[in-house]
Length: 503
Image (cartoon, rainbow, N blue to C red; front, side, top):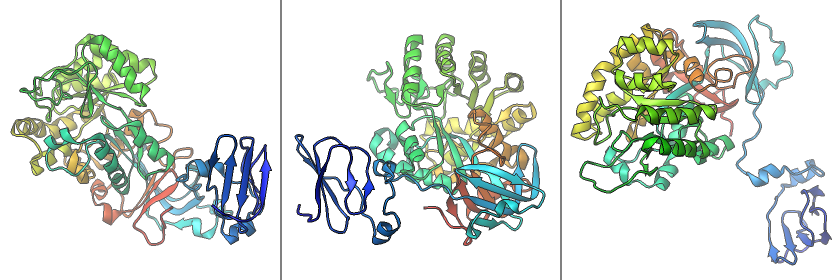
């Protein structure tokens, strides 16, 4: 490659010959050339051969303005790194406070560096004095609500197939490449945080954190743990292939005996799991168990709980029946997923022990409507669907801390927000909003960061046209009522012409 221009040698640093921009330290014996416009840098490293690095191509304007500026090496290493968050001030906001169950009118809210740094409710506008005019957003009384949290998703079971059986043949690569679409759609609906209860891996979580792809904050269980023949074992009754010993089966890992439970709970944590999910009872979609089955022995559950507690985290259990729920919580399990068949005695026990319940009613509705299941699984679905709403109300009345979850699979993910409308038939708007904000934040052990519009909390916010404390179903009418979604202080989605998306 012929560049033309100045040739020089340095043993301590690369210096941008065209602009005098310094680029950290380099190996010794490095020879570099630049073109006369300072646009391309070629480095030859001896005696290790020749390597070419395109480090930076400044525009003429940048050459003029940043003649001696240091290059941000972090953007060379991670070119997708997002720009710093804008300082934004929302004036004339009506804050939705799910913790206290009230509205705070005429508020001014300032966010910076991804945090809510100041809230003023006395009508003062002094906190806008040092903010550019274009960064002061007059909400004119519109509602500023905490970002929503879905505590039970499976982003690895992506859209694209018409039946659940088809997913047994889907490769991890196909799933992973489709997951960014799913994450962006969840964020657009107002879900700024999700908890994945089986299937999502560390790579997709880190891609969101690093800004490679847009999406909600992701808390992951890695693979759920299942016994042989349990809810996570996808082999049919006529499949004689031996497995287990930690084998992966779809979104789960099959383990038997305390030794394997110790080992593979630790393995999931090693691979980045934020918590551990177990299949503590039978399920709808699994081919060889029944809903009423209790799965895992006491010794196996104790082993998994011990591993989680030693790592400063918790275990949640897929359980529908009183028997499965009671076994799990007596052994230290902190969360129950689904719980459609819970009875009053068990609900009171959960309340006393501060155990979280995450119902997922919309998945049973969609299973029925879309005929997504085999005949055997469809029959099990009918059983839990009929009891779901009744037991949800009973649990709330008994004092159980209830969280928001959906558990949608494959092509059903579009119905995520419909869980608000389903619950609306038995719960109040405040009870439902708390399940998707303050209660969910407690389950995630993020109660000092997520779920509220409060100073020091993450700037995860929704701008709403109407009051969700009067009509929670507005959150199921995304295009009409969610004007903007702000996650980590950046405008991720905007349906409002006066509010631009941060790129």
